[in-house]
Image (cartoon, rainbow, N blue to C red; front, side, top):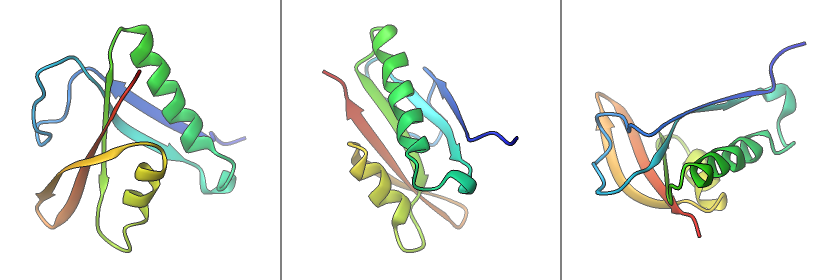
Length: 103
């Protein structure tokens, strides 16, 4: 049996993300197995990240993704409730930072 997904979060953002003036939980890594595509694994992992933030008393969750190609990842995070903030480039890699404020 293979893993269905993996998530890595931290209160420390990557160096390329613009700093914020408050505590945050940053999603550094989110991946779901293509074998389980369409079953909401990624959303469940994002829900887990949000819950981790709440338990720590953090109201800001940020994540970034590849912004190239057809923009599918950008649309995915927007549909998951994240708002676009900063665009960045690492070498030839186009990226987009998102944030979501928790109630």
